[in-house]
Length: 289
Ligand code: PAF
Image 1 (cartoon, rainbow, N blue to C red):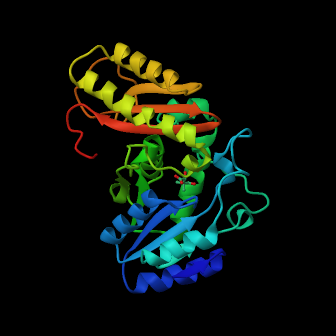
Image 2: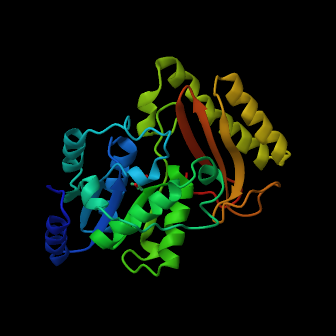
């Protein structure tokens, strides 16, 4: 595996790979876990070569968020990627990504406004901008993202559609189902911040979500099911809950009634200082988890 950190090296390496086949890009912020490695394996099914990027993107962190504390372990991550057969690691510096005078931002209205967009102002502008840059830098045939960040995936697909991106085209932006720990907690680089007690309590999140989904699918009142989910989180020691929402799976518009089409239950809640998010399919045509 080759590792490059300048745009000139990247262009040469990508041109070289393209001579012998198609390219799938897996953008990450590093601190890789099994969820990321699943994305790499899935990427290999879609294309001849996998390019992974590791870039802790400052523009998607708010002023009071964990940018400085975000785990950075490039050497260990590179070894994991190499073992997965990744051909090229793109690990730019902040200066390479955002040179002095950088002045452009992509803002996707609608789908990025509620949920995490409401509690993390500017977050999805940072995500859309950096992902658009990564797409232009690598020009992949395919790109893969985890469904754990369901709203992020919706924002990226909308951005690609609205900006007529050809590489990758929207249908080649693939969502990969969330990888979970044995007890059901969604894998996340932020789980490393949890104390043993917080980690034990965190499992309430997927469990209470599954209970709420069972109730909703059985025809229970949606507001009541969501209220019980909030109460279960509070009882387990979760602090502020940013949102507990049943939403249309594509538009992310909130649903107050039992869903008739594909829907998602989405939650963001803090335990100690750590903000955890999760989402699961609800109702007919779930299929993917
Ligand atoms: O999901 C992530 O790790 C990041 O938001 C992404 C897509 C790599 C953009 O920085």
